[in-house]
Length: 182
Image (cartoon, rainbow, N blue to C red; front, side):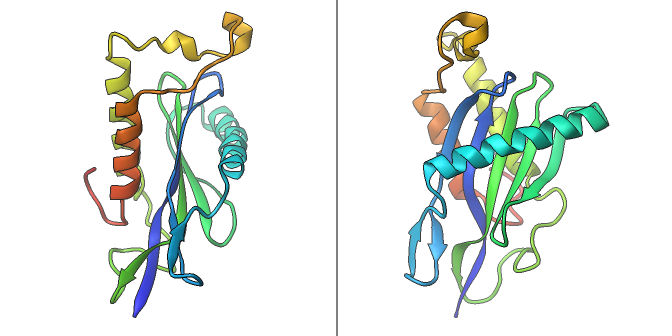
């Protein structure tokens, strides 16, 4: 018997000026066709990531701190977004598909139809932050080139580092509920 467990559907990195820096989209299991395909289009994921900015702003205003914001909002019965903000204002967003990975046999890990435990995404945020810090340490990377139009006069660009994209792909494909290191 095949069971579906949570998987990452999308990873997003949003700059301190609320400009999108990077988006990685991952396929999810579709039991109707027994195949893997993204549950939303790239445009829909972009809009979903943008919608999390309001939640970040409200929680930052209320709490006044940065860090792990946990569940930002449940999009529908299948998708939920989780967020983390660094002390420099860069935001990491993880969109989880609650039925995204097929597992043959019984339920694996501590999740299932009930959702994720508190702190389950910390491993993902830590891995994303590590990849971002490695990117910032690259002497050929210019973080200022990613600022919005109002400050530089040029359009903000996305992160195009192949190594960073590979790190995001490894994180998204390697996470399952209960994983403690990525």
